[in-house]
Length: 122
Image (cartoon, rainbow, N blue to C red; front, top):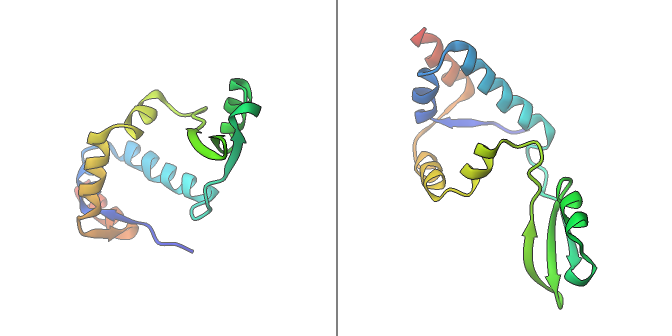
């Protein structure tokens, strides 16, 4: 079992949203974490000489694909099917990751405390 904690900044940001939208976000967090919250990321290794683009894209939708040349990794193929373009852009944005790092340095609060603070704002 795991415990999810939120930075205090999350309460501020969620507090700016409608109650309906806050609930959707928190429900989506719960839904995502039920799939494999602590499972290792699966990866498949393929030698470049055996790989085709179609094969790599198809495999990458199920697990990450490491392409190798002479046994050395040369590329990582990650499937993005089902993701929104904004999610993909954010995941490669240095500004986004800077914001994530800043939030990780903040004091954290429990889910119950987050919901208590949000309920007070209503």
